[in-house]
Image (cartoon, rainbow over all chains, first blue to last red; front, side, top):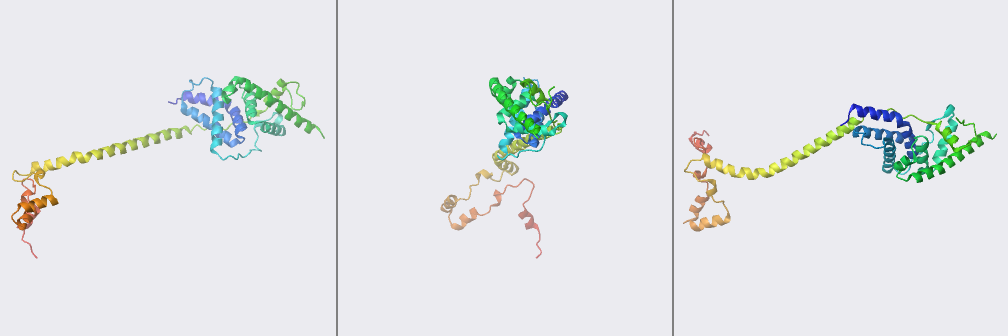
Length: 167
Length: 143
C-alpha cells in the first residue's frame, strides 16, 4: 500500500535527482520529450510500488530504471530517432549558450556507452561501482570508458575554445 | 573554479569542475495524479476477473440445471394426479417399434389407432382442476 510517507520520500528523491536523471535520459534518448516521459514514468512506478526501504541503492536503482525505460521505449518506437538538436541540456555558467551548445555537441559525438558513463559520473555523481550496477558492466570498464570519453570531451571543448579565439 | 575562458585546463580535475558548472536543466514537476490510473487499472482488472468468474459459474450452473429439473417435473405431476391416472414413466414413447408392437397386439388396425390416439386418462391433472376441453364441452357455443 502507498502511504503519505512514501509519497514524501518519492517527491524528495525527485527533487534531488530529477535533473540528473533527465540529463541521463536525454543523453540516451537524445530527445527531451521522451526523456521527460521516462523520468516521470519511473517515479510514477515508484509511487505505485510503495515500499522504498527494500531498495538497497535508491540512486543506482533510479538511474537503472530510467535507462531501462528509455531503452524499452526505443524498442517500441520506430528505429529512426529524431535528433533534438535545438533544445538545451544544461544551464551554462554565465548563461553562455554557445558553450552549452558546443558541450552538447561534444557529448552527442561520443559513442553512446561512453556518453552514459560520463553523464553518470560528472553530473549524476555516481561512483564507478554504481555506474557498473546501472549499466551492468564492471567498475573497471566504467572507469575505462570514462577516461576515453573525458579525453574526447576535453579535446572537443579545447578545439571549440581555440576556434572561437581565432579571428 | 575554472572559467570557460581558460582555454587550457591545467588538469582533469579542473576540467571536471568546469563541466560541473553546467547544471542539468530542471525536470518538469512530478505529475502525482497519474497513480490513480494505475489504481483504476487494477480496479478494472478486478472487475473483469469478477465478471469472468461469474460467467464461468453461470455456465456450470446452467450445465447442471437440466439434470436437476427433468426428474422433479414428472414427480411433481405424479404427486398432483389422482390414483386413477398413470404415471408418465409408464407411458411408452411413440416410436416405430412401439407402434409395430401395438399393431401386432391389437385385433384390428382401428383399435390400434384408438390406442395410440389421445387418451384422457393419461392427462395428469391436479385434483380439483378441470381441463379446458371439459369446460368447453359444458359451454353452449353460439355460432
